[in-house]
Length: 300
Image (cartoon, rainbow, N blue to C red; front, side, top):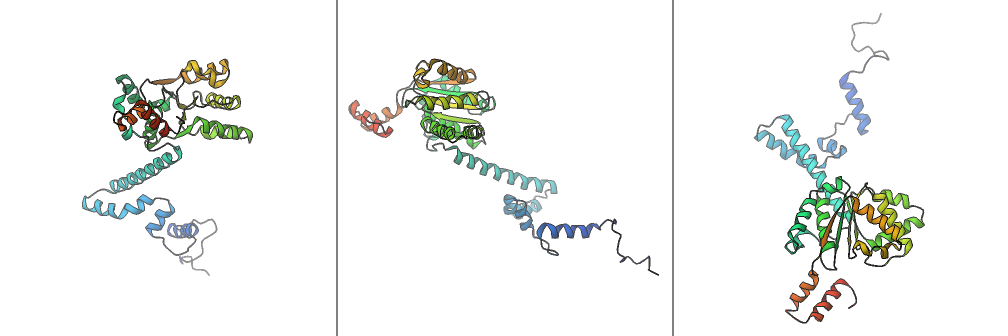
């Protein structure tokens, strides 16, 4: 007769597996190495926790020295991991934004701006306008700092975790036309919708064809109340009929942009001209203008 007191008797099919055996089975299935206990480094690598892996030994020594609780020890490691991930994410956002990084707050001459304009800019720096899908429209003469201003603002926003894309208008419309030609315009517009802020630089600076302006209008209509547009232009709205080739289309585009917007008017002299004059030490105006045009890559 079988000994009913023998603990080694095989359990029935429906009997639960002992906890310690189940852990070994799960571990073997997870790592493909039966009987091998993975190291803490391996576990953290599997969980994709690089900051944990780099910091847990130092944090453990600090926890012992400062008599931290288990929860405090874990909090410090989680905080380190979150900070590392945030920094990596913002660095990625800056790279993909295509912003000219040399145009930042450090190189921007804020003291050139009138007080009211500085107050408007201060109200934009927290990024709240992105949450409200408001537009930022910067107008002014060439060299007044429109592009520099928006690029500096958007670098700060990208560094705070906001997704921004910068495109000169001439290149953007070519991207839109290529997508339309390839029957992928809807897909491209969906891609652009991933960015909270879309910077369109120098709209109206170069005359565009009707086809180019049609796809640009399609983009503006698509982003209306869905995402922020930040644009620069030398042309006041009264001159936009020349951009869109049609008064009705121009009016519709302006209506969508202005409805929820902050308008920045940089009615300032060209800072490039001022810098050129300073470099020529009071030389004649034509010489300074020549230097300025060469810097801008334009014919004299």
